[in-house]
Image (cartoon, rainbow, N blue to C red; front, side, top):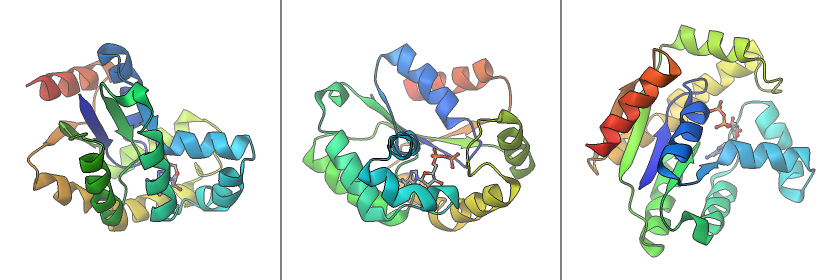
Length: 185
Ligand code: ADP
């Protein structure tokens, strides 16, 4: 099963991705996690993207697309994957269509986690992960970027008939239950 987890910062994508990974035994691929690890290890990629992440802006499409295309070639993704944080722009979604076609990986479910904006901000501020982009100002930038650049990606998948809208308010277990029953339908 190939799943894309979609939603604004603070919607709970990372949390639900880990649960889905365990339940379906398919790996979680988070572009944000890859970038944060690269920054921590000061790799060339990390050096290149650090200021971008710190400011809540987006890494250039080409960098992300190449990274995902390459990563997905790993045979561990052959039986499925949970994509989290990608595609995040319409050009990324278009590029991913080509990658998915070339690698024979159709998307089965595009799961949208919906959470009201006030709740997102308070969740991020209270999760205290010590991320440089988790200040109130940077969260506002990330939400703006989400609305302008990322939200339109949903229309791209609407056209494919794979969108599953999930209410992202509730306990972690309740939301997980909504997601699994919707993708198994
Ligand atoms: P969140 O959903 O909380 O914003 P992520 O871990 O998904 O967190 O992403 C953190 C940051 O990593 C983003 O603000 C952005 O700078 C960068 N990033 C992650 N994925 C992408 C992507 N697909 N395209 C561009 N930038 C990305």
